[in-house]
Amino acid sequence: MCGIVGYTGFQDAYDIVINGLRRLEYRGYDSAGIVLEGPDNKLEVEKTKGKVDDLVNISKDLKGKFNIGMGHTRWATHGVPSDRNSHPHLSNNGKIAIVHNGIIENYDTIKTMLTEKGYTFKSETDTEVLVNLIQYFMELNPEIDFPTAVRYALNEVYGAYAITVLHEDYPGVLVVGRLGSPLAIGIGDKEYFIASDASPFVEFTKEAIYLEEGHMATISLENGVDIRTINDNSKIEPEIQQLKLSLEQIEKGGYEHFMLKEIFEQPKSIHDTMRGRLLVEEGVIKMAGIWDHVERFKNANRIIIIACGTSWHAGLIGEYLIEEYARIPVEVEYASEFRYRNPIITDKDVVIAISQSGETADTMAALKLAKEKGAFIYGICNVVDSSIARITDAGSYTHAGPEIGVASTKAFTAQLTILTLIAFKLGKHNGNLGNADFMSLIAELDAIPKRVEEVLSSTHEQIQQIAKDFVSTSNFLYLGRGYNYPAALEGALKLKEISYIHAEGYPAAEMKHGPIALIDENMPIVIIAPKKGHYDKIVSNVQEIKARKGKIIAVVNKGDRQVSEMADYVIEIPETSECFSPIVASVPLQLLAYYIAVYRGANVDQPRNLAKSVTVE
Ligand code: M6R
Image (cartoon, rainbow, N blue to C red):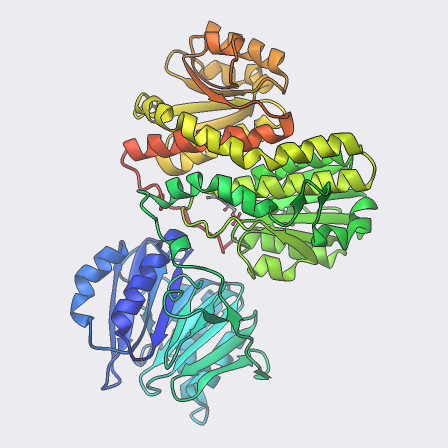
């Protein structure tokens, strides 16, 4: 959601900023802009509604002339996507430029105050208020410098932000700040980069500082990086990290879309999630995060899983896993609902927060609430050092590698893998999972990457054919039972996110309580029907659909007969224990959503209105 890129150094700032914005496109946006500072110290601004390509069309004359600048991709919150609302925004005196991610919640009060003092506003954004507040403080206190004015302004606002600011009278100086929205500073040789994540600068440097919450930095070639706390200006020693990210990981590598690449990466990403944790020959699961706090889990009244979207679906499967194997009661909550319903939380509760990005505002707010009430917080995040990962008491990274397609695929199966490991580990420890069953389950888990590879190679072409028949469909129903009910929800979410076809997921047995009314010869129904998992009951559900002439796309185990005979389309997956079937069954559903969307001409990696990390509530 929104992206920031900044640069100062010896290279062409225009190229660095534009290419950096392209690397951040995955975050989701609807407008883009750039500001560059010339040798005469004047600020050159170009911005537009639309994509980075549209920005390039109006700004290419700026190429090759500047060594310092910054850019932004905006995902509209305050004000529609438009040229005027795009960032950068300038102060009334035209000297200060800002780009901003996040929301200034008290912007209206500040705007009223500034308006009374004669300030005018060209846009509807909260960001333009902030840049004028900086100008206001500089005029009010002529003795203070530009970074101090930024600090004063940031102390007056509340909400969430990552900002980068330039001032004509302070040539060569970039001021950045962060609260609730990530910002990284890349340290090169005689150059500095700023970005919402490291992807825009990983090809130039492997050294980065991740700005901490409530910190700001003044960056210049002359004085390097000076980090201060926003509230009291205390100096902070920078902690330089070595980036593990590689360029290859954030490029498409010959695939048409990141989403397809990420679907095909799953055998590896699931394996990477288990690497060093699942030691089959030794018969152990090593997870320091769990082991160090195993008594907290063992003595927990209950586990509450909080998450949003796809991560919430993973949480539902986590509930099945943990209750079945560890026999600890689990509740799964949408983070956004949990936070606002005055939940009962005690210090006997363990909260697991699941988030691919580790930046989701709703999940962050919910876990802060749980923390305040004394619960133990365990994080499952994909992005290393993300905000959620930093504030949890303990946790496990999924290690799925960067996920760039907005529709989550490999992060989901990695989350399921971690939850499986947790359930087995806790079950073994508290005696609910006997040694023989444990050994057989972990051996099967170890082979899951292979099973996923089989599914990819056996279904890829077939699904392309099936997808062609559903390009013009308006509705889809996804059904599953037990572990595969959340898998059905996830299949439906994937389809609607990227193809814009209305799709609903339901527990198969619930169909007769309502959705059955929708079924006729035009309604495609994807039904997940593996052998292990209430198969007989599913057969009855399929019969009910057949009797109403629904079009059945069945995901079944190899050699299946009963469901396959009734289905219009049959997708075969290998047989596994029921607890692993959502991982294996999700793969063809991801491919189905992907190809339907591609054939409809949709922008698969950047679907309309969606953002990769949802950093606003
Ligand atoms: O980064 P998170 O896992 O916290 O994100 C949660 C949801 O926003 C996310 O899963 C969303 O539903 C995806 N677009 C799903 O494909």
